Image (cartoon, rainbow, N blue to C red; front, top):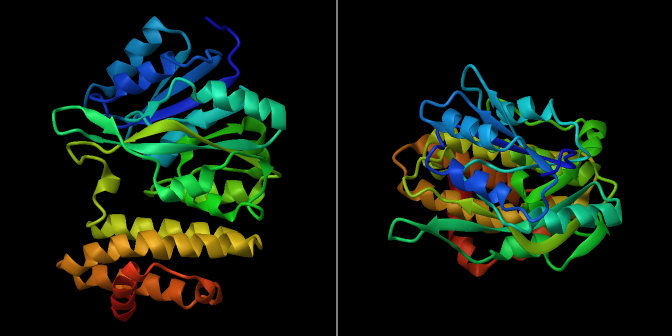
Length: 321
């Protein structure tokens, strides 16, 4: 067992006792073993803290932080980030699964390229109908962000990468986080969206790999808060995060990346939210989706986009709300 870790993986969790053992096992199964994991129990009401403590008791590569009150995913990640002293860092949510070759793939790549971070692909881990979970296929926007492999690229050269807005699909140099002043927003959902765009905008260069490195769990019980976009408070956090991420690209003068991100939002996010809005009992929900859609559609760069015909009825309706 390594005593000199090279990578720290930050693993926050709130009430994830049913799934945390699989996340922990996926770290233990890494073929690259020079890692440390900081497990952050966000004041869980279930056995999450005990699961984390058990992992630390049997494997000294695990460290545990117990927060005294629930502070949210962003704050939990930031609490662990303050303890990182390894050259590289990454993230894994405690209900997800890191594939065995993930660190083996990304650490040598960053060593070879000198890039600030590397971005990998991911798939959904969905209920299989018989009590388990099965991984899906790489979705088109994920594929566009991570394939083919690119070394030492930038957001100007590869604007489609902006569709990859999750924290746990990346491995970074710790020094980059410090130099770029990166921290997660606290007290908000979708906290990794703005951080992802800040990473792309501020990096000297980064790498992308088409390999699937994470299975992202869609909980069978629907308990993940982001599985409840019909809630108006969740909607507002979602819209705010997308708006803030796009504002980063605008403010840092990456017009191709901003245009790509606008296209992604109009192709994927607006139709999804508009579908919910059609059946939603609250007019406030429709108004919020409508205002967001109009803001996007009225941007000059949106007029340059060719959008799928299938989305046009939803986009037209949303603009009238």
